[in-house]
Image 1 (cartoon, rainbow, N blue to C red):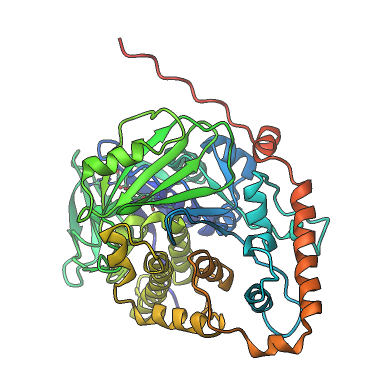
Image 2: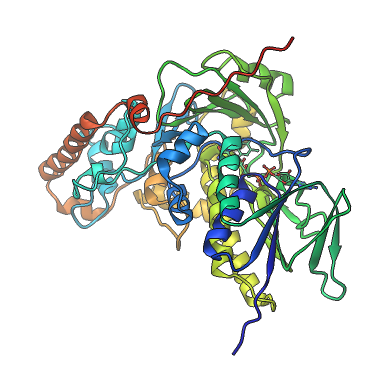
Length: 510
Ligand code: FAD
């Protein structure tokens, strides 16, 4: 039995995907492989991608990133969930909070008891049983407290908002300190080996030839190696996720630093609001079939916290995924592997899970097709399940005010999603298949937040007397109120633990 090791890895692209990959591989491979990142300042990075989900903490821990240093370096803030405005009906407002809802006690899940009591008019709104939702409402934040093991205070799920360009810079410093070599230059040619067509080198405008055994394509939407060279193919999901453009603009901060992302649905798309320490990030994701670029820009600019700090920057995309994320000796990570709109902040997570998967199926010189096929199977499963969750937000709307929303409410759905909706509609039941990303708590909050009321509840709920269920719900709610009471204000927490230096203002133009 023997393994012939690879020697060198070339990461093409130095955006979030490129530097996350380089930093993680430099740590995991313990300096045994030469890792080189090729990036072009002339081309630049997409520069958006500022909201994350809690799994990013695992990435940071594995790579060895110190939380306070990372927050300071990226003007970061904390995130407890996403507030959705106008998604069910105009005027609706709900939050998808991270972590759990309620507390299990008897035979069936918490929400089943809540559904029954709500149908009797004897339950409080769902948010009152969720610590991250109530903390968000009060603009409070505290990381999990290990000294109170059985309390919701020990179970606070959170993520971060940060400045995407500063994050790429932070990771670069981190990767270079672990031996990663950066090469500045524009790739103008890709060389393939005769016979099997593996990529063996990229050639820069300077004429320099960068050779490698394994190439990670982090070149963004263009997919320089995976698509332009290997022509792997792209599966277009526009019929389910029709938004195809975005305009991004930073603006001055609001007086209160909220610990959550906000997503406000507009006439033919939605707007993100991401509060950072030094500014607020905003963007309007929209469908160009239903709204003009000018109207989209006007809508964005009329819904900002403060003065815009730049002109809106246009970005075009096609939702979908590469048919195979790993083809020959090229693994596409980040935007080169596919794109799901940032409604649930999942793209950076997809980078992280691709890196983990690459480490799990790390190749030797043989590039065994079985490993590659398994990598691709898992990637597809992950993409499709996240896609379904995002489509859910669109399909579950009752808005009658625009053609876009009516079309979304009546579109045909992937079977996997129809099944989940039918299951919930019948008895409020939910199923999480394998290790798909979003848990029952996430699905519940969107079903409920967008007004899908199940026809019944789990029959075993009736085994408990209503009085006991009422007391049980009330005790869970009271514990949450007490927990939120002791949490500090989000801004005060940051000021005490991880306040960033204000950025140096650029000199005014002469
Ligand atoms: P890029 O940032 O585009 O980097 C590509 C790199 O390849 C650059 O360094 C470039 O110089 C290099 N390159 C390309 N061609 C060449 C060449 N010929 N020669 C040399 N170098 C080359 N994700 C989230 O998780 N949360 C969010 O809130 C979020 N919001 C988003 C909003 C929008 C509108 C969009 C479009 C994306 C959003 N994302 C979000 C996704 C996130 O921005 C990306 O996943 C992330 O930035 C990774 O990008 P990337 O590194 O793959 O590509």
